[in-house]
Image 1 (cartoon, rainbow, N blue to C red):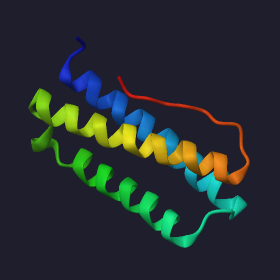
Image 2 (cartoon, one colour):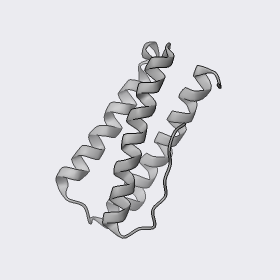
Image 3 (cartoon, helix red, strand yellow):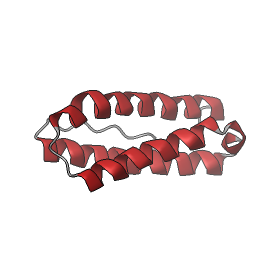
Amino acid sequence: MASLAAEWQKVRTVLEYQKYEWHNVILPRNMLDDAFKDRVNNMFLDLEQYLDNDESLNTAEALWNIQLDQNELSNNLVLACVMSGFEVRCYVVR
């Protein structure tokens, strides 16, 4: 298994890419209801806050929880792509 720091960086990189796609590709199309947009935006905020708290990243269990949250966000972004009529791209942190 890769080091904890490398796994943390992988989650951060995927999150940055997903946030770019969300703000620059999916949201401008404006085909999602406001409640769904709010839920996804809150997921981004929660993950970013968790990742910015370096003390919480010291254990493998904390990393696992981050990855689970990242995968839940990925599922919602896939759903957003489908609802917006885009080709679906799946990004899963392993």
